[in-house]
Image (cartoon, rainbow, N blue to C red; front, side, top):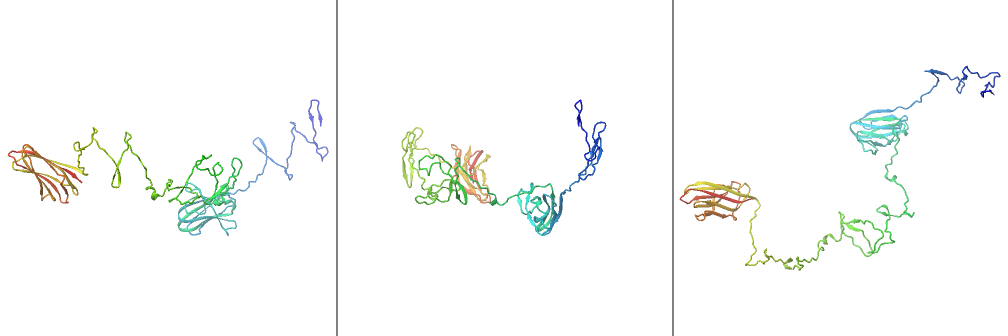
Amino acid sequence: MRTQSAGDVIVKLADATIPGQQVSVDSSGRLTLKLNDGSGNSVTSTLIGTHQSLDSNVTQIATTSDKTVSAALAALNATASLTTNGTSGGILQLAGTWVGTIVVEASNDGGTTWSALDLLDLPPNGANALVASVAANGDYLIVGVSTWAQVRARMSAFTSGSATAQINLSQNGFEKLALQTNPANLKTQAWMNDGAGTALSSSSIGGLQSLAVTDGADGPVAPGTVASKSMLAGGQYSSTLPVLTTGQQAAMQVDSSGRILVANPASAVANLNATVRLQDGAGNAITSTTAGSKQTLDVDLRDGSGNAYTTSNPLPVVVSQNIPGTNINKYNTTVALALASSTNHIYTITTGKTFTGKKFWISASGKVRADIKTSPDGATYTTYWTAFNSVAEPNITIDMDLLSITDSGTGSTIEITITNDDVNVFDVFSTISGVEN
């Protein structure tokens, strides 16, 4: 190796085992190299495009493809089975019309011994819950495929029909699920301290270990003493109040609606008495009078001018008949009633109803006679009232408060027969008024 005047370094490479054999370069100053593999074999190359690329021999590692099996399960212990061959997840799909129970089992000894596998019923048909067997169509994730060599679906109970069971296994499937379904194992142990680092205590209540909670004061707070802390107090349901002795304690007693029980329900009403003093607007006490077993208030009624009611200033009383039902006002007119002739005003009572009379009105410009009759069948009549008018009093009014007739079912009627007792011809008018119920 030597350095030229221009600063270039010249290096001569020689073979260490063959004297005089040196590494040569081409006209562009490039070295020519030969590559051998670990066994001394020359590495070849191939021209690809404008590049001379080393030849390579890459061997593809065999992979496990997805696997599937489908079978009709139409009898007890019918199965659909296949080997897992390195797959890591699986889906069971069930279809068809069938009644029975299907389980999924796995084996590692060629099918001699089978162990049950859990299934996860997948939405939308499933509830995303872990199950040991299925009895309906749907998609189910098989849990724990990767640890077994063979899996199968088996009809463990059969009633009728045929279920199409298809198992799909995949090497890129779901990871093995580790689901804990035993509530006894889902527990966590923890130690709880307060803000000062003091361990919190607990008490066993009804089989549960509950935190002990006390007031900030040391010991119970005396009645009437303000507590440093307060809390919401609950009650205990009870149909009857407890009986306690001195020194015993009890929770506040409430009924099924959360209302506080303060006395025995049977005697509570009798004990709800109160003393009330009544006064008028001027502050005068209102007195009372014993009337039999009742104590009644004294009442002094007066008229609008403040005068007491007396025999000379009586209390006005209006008696009004108010009969429930349908009001009936049957009106009739007869034009030019001839001399000594009669006209009949008939009302037929509604089937199944009772007619209660109020008033009958008859009016004419001449003298007439009015006969009030009733009939159970519209054919045979009985007369109950007869009335006459006069020139001075042409109108006849008859109170019928005492008239009550019930339909007999054969056409019961009420009739006013009006007869012309005058020497002239004139019109007559009449109304039957009452209530039906």
